[in-house]
Amino acid sequence: MLPVLFIFSTLLPAVAAADTTAILQERCASCHNLKGPASATLAALWQRKGPDMFYAGNKYRSDWVEAWLQNPKRIRPAGMFYMDHIKPGPKRDLVDTSTLKGHLKLNAADAKAVAAALAGLKANSALIKAEKHDASMAPGPLGEMMFDKIYGCMACHQIEPGYGGVSGSEMYTAGKRLTPEFMLSYIRSPQAWDPKIWMPNKHVPKDNMQKLVNYIIDLSKENFDE
Amino acid sequence: MNRYILNIAMAALLLLPAISQAETAADNYKTYCIQCHGMQGNGMGENIRDMSVQPRDHTDAKSMGGRSDAELFKVIKEGGLAINKSSLMPPWDGTFTDDEIHDLVKHLRKLCKCKHAG
Figure 1 (cartoon, rainbow over the protein chains, first blue to last red):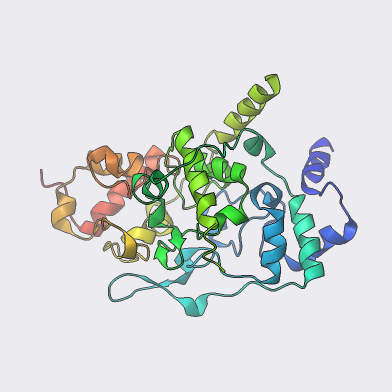
Figure 2 (cartoon, rainbow over the protein chains, first blue to last red):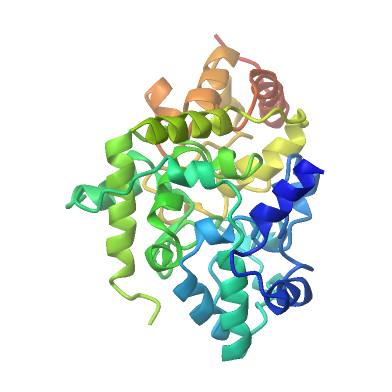
């Protein structure tokens, strides 16, 4: 009984209004994992239709969630899992855009309710509590060099629309989308969050993790998405 | 302070590599490698357009034959810098077990239809 209580206590929002959890089940559960755990096998990973949401409250900035749900735009240029959306091209493999599907759009009231419910899904809180973001560690010109060359993040992530890799999520909006602690933790170990994810652990030293995150936050202030 | 140390300790436990099922080399290759090395393994992955260094063509018997199995194991596990190549090739030690990497080396030998020439 205790494990069951524990699971429910970690999943339910602090202000668990019945209608907000119901709205997650109704609108989100068919594509998003709301309960965890993350995929432990490739077979399970390949079935994933949308990002895991069981730790959404630790991952996303709630204000971004509420706004995005009312005006959803693609975050991963090659879709949730790039392997499902590629085709051979003359010079390189290409994203098969004909297979990409959009995200449903919510009205303001539903977006607010969903954002509030997602904010209560806080699995992996120990990982978040272990991180301390230091906004004072400015990356300077090294930021882009670290992202592009030293750690090669740009191989999979775009730093402005149309520039960079496509199999990862766009980074020019990540500073608005993600909490700094989540970015730190995910860079520290993507596999701690998602054991089979196709992002490798680059073993970034702790000071450079702070600078990378501050670079990503600075990048989002360029407002490339507007 | 004690609470901070406790949080670090709890996080360290969670960071231990998850015990997960070994996957086949073919499945690992298509999940993790083709994003850069391409669906055909020819180095023409969907991510390559803006890369300063192009990924290795795994079907090129001449260049792949120049690498020993130990070097291929090392570059997959520790990344390009470990064999003085590009940092764009990441270390995959957080993703694959050593056994899975050995299987991937065998898979690469099938793709290049080659052995180490040395």
